[in-house]
Structures are given as C-alpha cells and as structure tokens.
Length: 403
Ligand SMILES: Nc1ncnc2c1ncn2[C@@H]1O[C@H](COP(=O)(O)OP(=O)(O)OP(=O)(O)O)[C@@H](O)[C@H]1O
Ligand SMILES: O=C(O)[C@H](O)COP(=O)(O)O
Image (cartoon, rainbow, N blue to C red; front, side):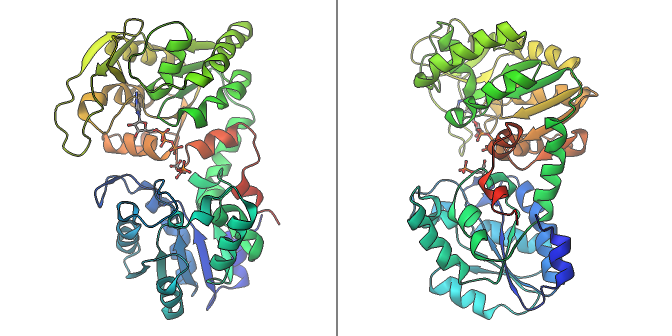
C-alpha cells in the first residue's frame, strides 16, 4: 500500500487529488454536533494542499436514497473543514455534474474543494458492479490521483471506496495508516482480560461480529439497541424495542458457544424505557422509567441501560487489560438516555486498560458527554469498519489501496 509520504515524495503539485474521506458527522439540522471525523482527516488534506495539490474531498453523509436530499448535504462539513484548515474551501452542489466539474476546473494549486454527498447518486452504493463502475468512471474524470482516507467507510464496497481507486493511481492517507496500526495490535497479542462492549443501533450489521469475538474476547457486554435481540432470545418480552427477530437463532447459538468456550456474556439487568422514541431535536422530556430487563411492559421501548446495569458493567470493566467498545449504550443524544453510555465511558477513564472506542456515534458520544478524548487509548473513526477489521475480513476500501 503506497503511503501518503511516498505520494508526497513523488510530488503532487498541480495534480488533482481525490481524497475519499468519511465526513459522516452527526448533525442537528445544519449544526455539526461532533466534528471528530473532520478533524481526523484534516492533516491529510492540509499536507496535500501544502504540497500544491488541487484537493477534491468527497464523502457520504447519512443514508440518503440515491438522490439529492438537502437534509444530508455536506455543506456544513465543507464549511467546518475550511475553518479547521484556516482557508476557504469551495463547495460543489453536485457530485459529478456541472457544479463539480466547474468547481474542480476552477481549483488552483494548493486549494481545496468539497463535492456534495456521494450517496446522492444511486451508483455509489449499488450492488450492481456495472452501475457502480459507471459512477466511478465519472468520479475518475474529476481527478488524477486517489487518496483513500475514509476509514469509517472502508468496509463498504461502494464506488468511491472500492471501484474508484482501481481507476486512478492511489495511496492510503494518514488516518487510515493510524487506524490500521492501532487495530492491528488488537488482532495480535492482546493483553487479557480482553473485554468487548457492543451497543448502538446498526444491529444487523454488527451481530455477526460476535461469532468472531467469541474466539478472541474473555467477556462481552451487550447494551444499546443490540441488547433486545439477546433478551428476546432468552425468552423475555421486549415491548417495542429495537429487535432483529430473524437473528434470534444466531443469538441463541452465540450464547451456547460462549458457555462452551467460557466467554462471559453480560446483558442488561435493568433498562430505561419510554413509550416513544424521544424527540432528539426538541429535547423535550423523554418520560423515562426504569424496569427490570426481564419485565419490559408491552408498548414501551428500551432506550438505555438502567442504573443496576451501569454498576454491573463498571465492575465487569474494572479488571480489564484491553477494551474495545463500539456503539452507545443508549440514545445518548437525549439527556434522559445518556447515563448508560456515560457509565461505560467513565469506567474506561477510571481503568488502566488500553481502551479503543470505535464508531462515529460512539466517539461523538464520548466527546459530547464531556469526556477528554486523551483519557482513552484510541478513539477510532470507524465503527462497523473497525469491527470488520478486527474480524479479519477483507475490507474493500483497504484491499483497493493495495498495489
Ligand atoms: N436502545 C436503543 N434503541 C435505539 N437506538 C439506540 C439504542 N441505543 C443506542 N441507540 C442509537 O445508536 C446509535 C449509534 O449506533 P451505531 O451502530 O451507528 O454506532 P456507531 O458508533 O456510530 O458505529 P458506526 O460508526 O458503525 O455507525 C445512536 O444514534 C444511538 O441513539
Ligand atoms: O458511520 C459509519 O459507520 C460510516 O460512516 C459508514 O456509514 P454507513 O454505515 O451508512 O455505510
């Protein structure tokens, strides 16, 4: 894999360099609530610009349905990148259309442009190789060189992540190099006890990694939206909580194998519930109530770990030597459902363990809730990406950067 240092040594002055970043940041309207992913890629963009490249930064944001949707515009992220770079950043209002072509054509050496959300084009995420390839062809027309630095998206076989680097000379950015360097340590000699904490809402994406974690971890703590499929598998009712019913047989298999292998599975003993998903924008009261995890009433949904669970999880983290945490323990964006996430973050701060926090929302949660990011071993910009890396899977966005 060519490094950015090697690319810079070859010289990029005057070249149009396409940087595939992950600027998928949490937004409240058009306000960025955590800019960690933008700060993480800033050095790569700055180094290229300082070397005289004409830098085109591209990313997805959220999951729009293959067509323009103003709610998912990258304009706020482009503005923030400009602030962090201390320079004006041009913004193209489309991805491969007239605006993008004109914006790139107007770039002079050392200047930076951001193009609009890649997922406004159906070709970006298409499962059809030809459709993705056709979109990648159009992206390739914009640039001379490709730099992959969107670590959070390297597990996606998407046009800008997988197909585009095959069409241009390519290198890995500094963020990808750092992320892979840290995660590699967790796949080799892990200091034990190794505790994994899993939560969040992308349940179907992330349940599969448990299969692999059963071979590696000593203890697995489950929270957030992940917990309810486990509780249901154990025969408990979960009301209207997030549930992946089709995964129940797999979950039962995990529980059985964990017992055989002596891997400790820890599930919530109490949860915070509400009749409705909270209004995250208005921050109106969430009407929370705490119930035992095996007695969730019908018609309510679990939105956070309860206080007994928080104590239990802190005790299960206290003796850890290595911790990997992905996915918030609750809907931390609302103050009524942030305690579970705070409790895990605090336990990691208090523990001498080497802790890796992975995921866009998990990393954002830690910072938004006021924790010092330096108190953790590493805060990864990738959630799904870091989990799949730990699984030993071939990640399309890393494979595509190999020579
Ligand atoms: N019990 C729950 N029910 C519904 N949503 C939940 C629950 N607990 C947590 N969440 C939500 O999970 C979201 C984060 O989950 P996600 O799986 O996307 O994690 P992540 O750290 O961002 O990883 P990635 O980088 O892969 O997206 C948060 O927005 C949070 O509100
Ligand atoms: O937040 C993430 O995990 C990455 O930006 C990838 O987003 P995705 O899960 O929508 O592909």
